[in-house]
Picture 1 (cartoon, rainbow, N blue to C red):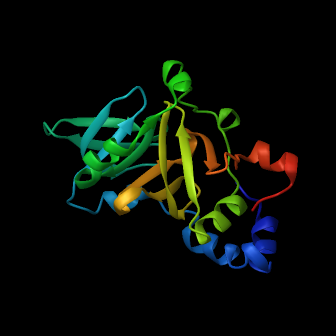
Picture 2 (picture 1 turned 45 degrees about the horizontal axis):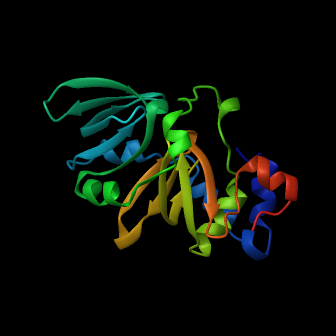
Length: 198
């Protein structure tokens, strides 16, 4: 998470970070679960361990949600165990486009309840990538690889458009790596070694 001073500096910055501060003010705290709980449409939650849960969110708490599945059964879901999610209408296309990192799929990480074990990505890396509509490859801790363009992000999530405009929401706690077409990683630990954010 960026400090308040970093956000304030970004608000006044020129170049690739111009407008970042205002963007974070409007988007930093938003959550896809707040949006879903108000909708009638069903969603597919790609749960850690390969489960795919189809249904609706009925209640959104800080760390957990009440999920009504296809059989109308209530499940209490911990958000940290959700890797990514999409509207049910997009599920088949998302599944077609997902690739696999075989090594990571055989020995998946997490889920990471403690932030110190997560693979962090700085907002000031994401913001220029979003504005440039850069094609990126996101590897999840379960080994799934999703390719697309960032359309938005918050403290907790990254909105991605895959091919054919297929929407998917990645949970930031479940991202293992993010790379561009040239193979460059934008993880915080990599970026801070080079001191380059774009």
